[in-house]
Length: 226
Image 1 (cartoon, helix red, strand yellow):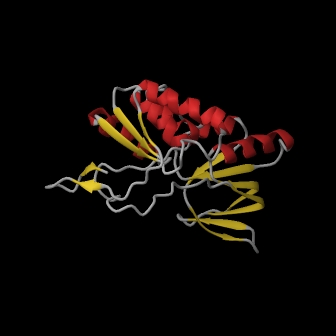
Image 2 (spheres, rainbow, N blue to C red):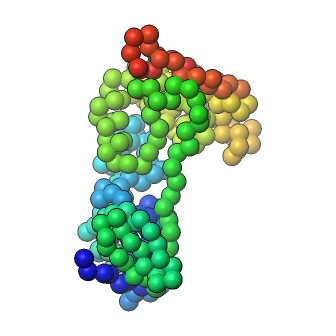
């Protein structure tokens, strides 16, 4: 397999990597920029909750694809980097391809933290991944059959999901162990009106509450409650 050479290599194709790449093009238009990300079709992370309500579809929340990035001056490669050789300045992809670089930027994003709650492995328990296929399955195969939803966590993502899923006629409960939703990021002048707004919509808010276990159905390995 032929080795590649680039001036700037960006590992990770989310908003951080995208903004870095487009900014680099503006400052150094003659430099070659290669971006490596896992998926050909990638989601805008902060828009994921709105797939299920306002946007009403996963394809309305897409990051630029190969053709769009090429037009912007960025070469997109789909794959996973298995190792980085800092001495020889190259990244090795799982397919054996090596990309040599002058400058390397790591922008790999984050993964959701799943607390060690008993029952988290049951069918019907989901986390918020940025994977296109995962979210596509949730939107088309899972959500149409959901009548009642419990959201564990009252931060930005939990609150956004609560409002958006409720728009679809789903009974929504949001559980937060802190005294208030969004208490770690806002003062009471904001988080109290937000709680009241959600409650006025018909969303049930449980604060000062912590999930001890996710309960299974009596005869199946599926979630029944918390």
